[in-house]
Image 1 (cartoon, helix red, strand yellow):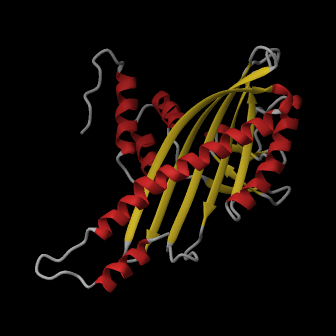
Image 2: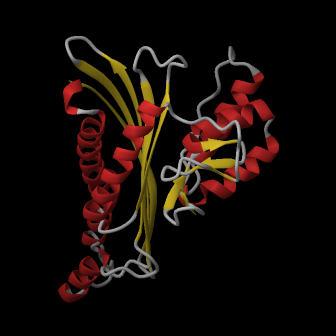
Length: 276
């Protein structure tokens, strides 16, 4: 049930809140399409806020210079151009596009190499992208923010019989210097899941979680961020499995025929076919 909007909100804030509330109730796999429609309806100022507040299924692009794939999101976008984490170039070219400082770019390069290997081992393939940007223009405080993206598409048919299965993960991290050799990290993670098994079920949903930790600066930003993301993804995967697939198995297990009970072998067959 939609909640009434606070009266104190401005007209633009109400439009933004209404648009976000609507998108929450629509299939995540169609977010890109619905978002385009909403952008045609809302004012330009609201459109910018809407783009920055909506997590949508990740799109894939290819670096024209290095031939490597990378993921598109609002965090590597400048106008209509997107920055490749591999070449650090915008495509289409954008002369005034925002780029990380030289110091932060070294961390970004290290992270992209490491997280691509992690993606191959953890997801058995897939695409990853790691973007960083300076929080302080003068680069004096050492604070920065970044996003780590993962996309795994099992294709048309997977080994488990899934006709379509897509996992999109967006991890946004903020880093601030702490005391006594510590760095404070704030992680906000969103996972978007879509799974379709022909003639059986269609599951779509998303989950967002946050975590804060103070970790040793000497260990390095990439290992620190990586350990937080790995722990968060494991927790979120277990939550999704319990909420969506556990519920599906529970429904199948409770199936019955009012006139005649289904044979045990039929029930077992249904349980087997709905497992992922």
